[in-house]
Image (tube, rainbow, N blue to C red; front, side, top):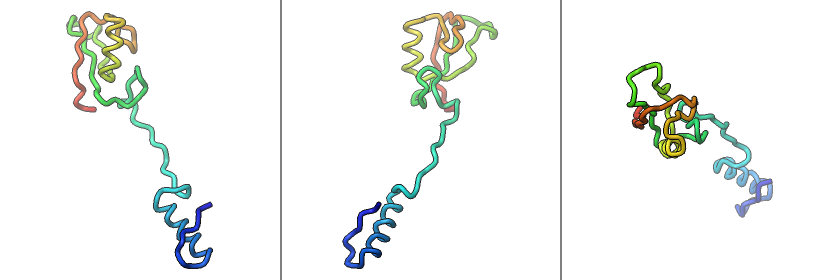
Length: 107
């Protein structure tokens, strides 16, 4: 229930004015729908929207079959993962010979 504003009018007019103010401020009468971010914007490690997205590239091999899939990660999360497990791509556990992080300019 909206509190009546001191408008100098009767109780009913004050309640209508308060209700209008609540709606204008985004009160209980209006709710925005929750929008999920696109999957590519979410880090597979943190499950949060990325702020500093990078792509993991294996510069220790020329074999395209062994290259990581080009997934993007939040820089801090992938760096921490590579510090713990230096030769593992965290999403697939594929072997990484020499990791390089490249900024993902597209995201």
